[in-house]
Amino acid sequence: MKIEIVPVWQQMTPELLEELAVFWQQNKAIANPAMAKARAEQAVCLGRDEAGAICGVSTAVIKVLPRLRQPMYYYRQYFAESMRGKHQVQPFFAASKRALQDYTTQQSQPESLGILLELENSKLVAAYTKAHEPAFDATFIGYSPRGLQLRVSYFEDAMLQAPTPLRAPAAVSGTRRTAGTRPAPSIPRHGNGRT
Image (cartoon, rainbow, N blue to C red; front, top):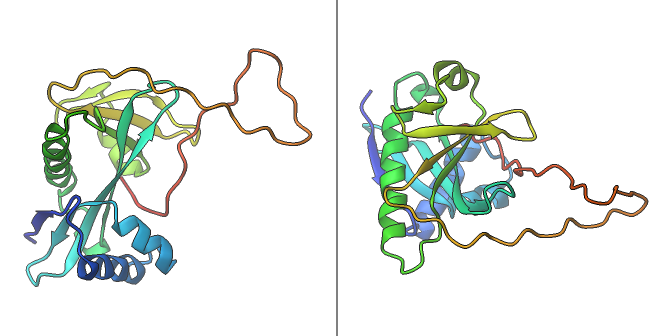
């Protein structure tokens, strides 16, 4: 099955937002309509099948890992069941990275150095076992608090920025920490998207 990958980063119309929200709901990816619309605002690329229907989507949102202290696009992609196993992961990722890099290079102060991936799909984890995967130019940087592989793919010519200040963790009533210790950093889970 051939799909068309369409960049939509920062170009979402009300019609596309609605179409994407319906796609997620129909595929039981994001059931909550408000969450589906909010995620649709983060769309990078859409995949359309031969009939023109959405069959895949990538999304991104800026995140700063405490260890990196640099802004990265936290990236997700999701395919309808009919598209899974059709070798679309790498082409979709490459098109999405191009769209994000093109957007970032037009900024006087880039909002991101590249892409952060948290691999939720066990088949991808099994397939990509090298510390650096040339096929999608992603480097292993450790594991998330959920025990999932974290990888980064930097944009061409990305330059380090001043370290983002770390936010002090909110105090929780009735808890104490030993001086000099920090709680484990986390990457919040967003919906059921799969990378």
